[in-house]
Each structure stands twice: as C-alpha cells, then as structure tokens.
Image 1: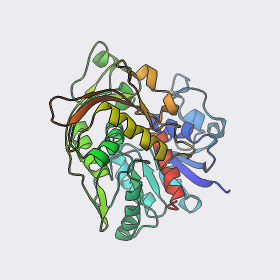
Image 2: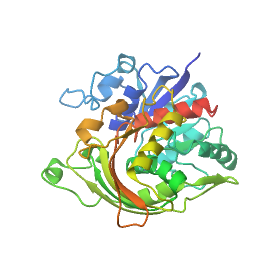
Image 3: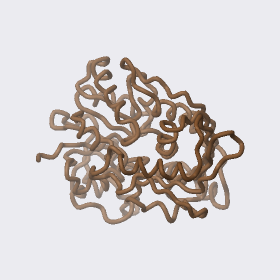
Image 4: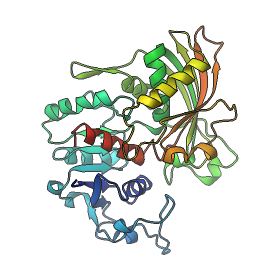
Length: 358
C-alpha cells in the first residue's frame, strides 16, 4: 500500500526525536517533511541537533535513523500541507495552539501538547481505552470548518491512570480515586528539572499537573453522547511528585468501587481486556497491553520500562483496600516517553487510520 505522508513539527526537541525514532521503517507512515524553529530551519537534521561544541544532541538512545539525517528542517510556514496526510505536533503548548490551528485547517494533527485538550469538541484519546470518542473528530471538523482535526494525547501522568482505571470503571463502577505519582525527571523536559534540584531529593509539587489529571481522567472515561463527551462520574484526588528516576512514571492508586472486587477478580479482568483490546495487531501495539504482577516488589521502573517496547502498562501490589467498603489499592508503571508520548501518538495514528479518519 502507499504510505501516508507525515510531517513532524518540533522535530529537534526530545519529543520530536522520539517521533523520529518511532516512525523509523513504519509500515504505514512515511516522514516526508520536518519542521522546527527559525534557529534550525534550513539545516540538515543532523546539523540542526548539533550543539555549538560539535556534539550531536541525540537524546533518545540508539543511532539516529539514516532516513532523517540529511532531511532539511523547514520553518513551520514552509510546510506544504497539500503534500501531507497527517501532522505530528511535538511543540510546547504556548506555541502549539496557533500552529495546530493553522495545520488542522488543512490536515489532521495528532499532538502531544495540552493546547486543545480541554475544548468541548476535542477528544483526549488513548488507543484501546476510548476509541469510540474518535467520532467527535467529525463534529470538530464541522464546527470549525476544517479539513483536518486536532487529536491531543493526555498528560503522560493521566495515561497510566486512565488505562488502569478503564476496566475497573466499566466492570466495577470505580467512583473515587486517590493517586500519588512518582514521576520521572524526563517528564520535565530538557530544562525542566535541574540535577541539583532532584539529586537526593523528591519534588512534592509539579505545576498544573494535578488539575490536568483530574480533568483528563474524567473526560477520557466519559461517554460520547449527542456530539459531546459527558464526563465520567468519578472523583479524582491526586498528588503529583518528581523523583530521581530517568524514565517512567510510577503511581500509587486507591480506588473505591460500587461492586465487590478483589485482587483475583481484578487480575481476571485485566487478562480479559488483554485478549479483547482494540489495538491488538497494530504496528506499535505491545503484545500485552496490561502486565499484572503478583510479586509485591513490582512494578519497578528499571524492570518495566522496556516491556512491550515501553507500551505495556504494568500493574502490581494489588490488594484489598480496607479504607473503603469495596475497593482496591495498586501500583502502576507507565512509560512517559513511549506510551505517554510520541510512540503512543503513533499508536493513536494507527488506530485512527484503521477507522478511516486519516
């Protein structure tokens, strides 16, 4: 088949580099245009990420894929949208709104930024969790008179929580959630966390993070009705912290449910979802969407971050919670730079391609 032609905007940043890697030899998508800031425009990609010292700042591990090295970085206004089927946006939120609005007028946009997450006609999609909300993209196109649409990923901390809550919410009526996150330093971006600030330390506050998790979780678990998403009837309380871990977010979760639940039935439920998950077989999907551990020492970031290529969500320490009449407590691990970022965006593109939205 002919591959879909895609562009990466913000291609020189850490998330942009994850897109470069995630799209290497992709069977359905081909990167044909790349764009970044004025400072990088006009340079070959390998030169655009070269620091003044001469060191090539490739931050995502492995080698730079050959396909991208000599590709010329364009200014955003130089992108030829008539020659594109899809845009991946890895732009920071402040600039993302204007850029994504301009692109979506002509072509679909999948974004890692928060610029459009909280709009009424914009779904926050996690492939395998709320695929049905993708139909809202048609309403969005009509509302805004666009040829394309904007589909943002959730905040990376929301991702693991929403993924693990989905089966519990649907089958057992999860109604209250308390969560404490232990988030990797890579989630703060290249300049977000200083070495002196995080070494031998825990940062007990991440600006705006907790509000994002509360709002996004309810929206993702909600239902699409009459062209709008009705938020899920679930209360979410969270404390978001930064810990000295390089990659991968760990979260401690307490859930109150309407129906009786115990660790054994929870395990069976996650296994059932593994066997029926909608994204099974897509190029970027892991063999197991959920990994359930009975070993009380799991999950651990160093042990879980490469499972399923960083796309598997790991659940452990599942115990009956005595604070509630009915409920559980558990730990989860989710890779913030894989499932929670560019690779998750590529999986979303695959799901939307199969739904003929791209």
